[in-house]
Image (cartoon, rainbow, N blue to C red; front, side, top):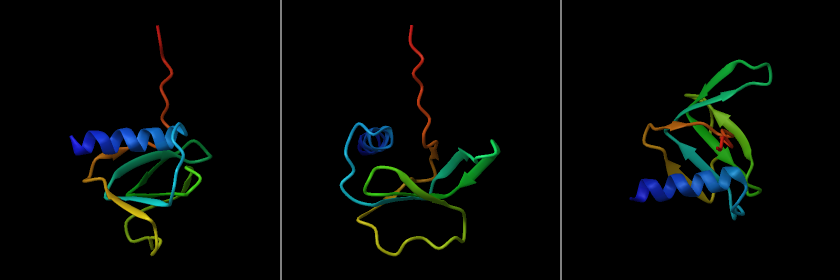
Length: 89
């Protein structure tokens, strides 16, 4: 139940439907995104700024920001930032 609420919160935050109140660091994730050149990029943590936008993604061993308002443990789950499916019938 708590994980469902967390996922809904993150989805709303990433979609911009809910205003972000503070920086958030989501750690321990199996994250995937695309680089500007279209290549797949894997990451293990994502920093979301107080404006609701992704500031940076981190790989294993990268230095994380030391001060964030919230830290969320993704429990090894998959995270796909920016994936918006507007498919409707």
